[in-house]
Length: 204
Image 1 (cartoon, rainbow, N blue to C red):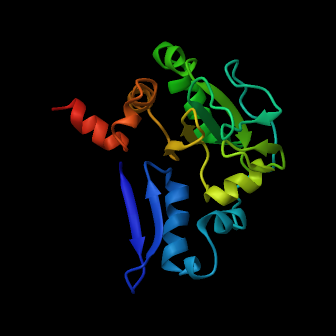
Image 2 (image 1 turned 90 degrees about the vertical axis):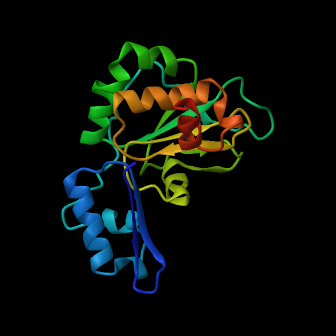
């Protein structure tokens, strides 16, 4: 939360936003819907050609010692991983990425938890070769396009068999990321299909 779903005049979903988005990105979403660009293209493509570019050229990402280096062979379809996998889709010149790395990822509680996962970082618009958790050969940019990603950072968590557990595509604050990691590391996703169901059970 918050989640915002935009519908067209026929009641069809035009755009879905999950979580907090900075003002310039939310304004772009409003223009995308109000001007009916959703009829011709996806929000990701609209952002890529924005007059004030919201997409930057591939460049240096924020390095962390816990990210696995390439080659990015993430296949879990044949041989299961020993622990869950988190894929960080980021880009250079990304303020929200800076907030994630200098905020939540800099907290001792988060680092203690996140080191219990397999972690990798991909440039969302790059042609870096990747083998996805499902065993498909592609590039980071093509995979992000297939997933419909348009915001960085986006964190996607996969289980030991390569099945997606959870996708977080907005600015994540410390307390929320800690809870998300507890949901994954405890294996609660096997019993509770969504994070919200698990949180509700915890609060009873």
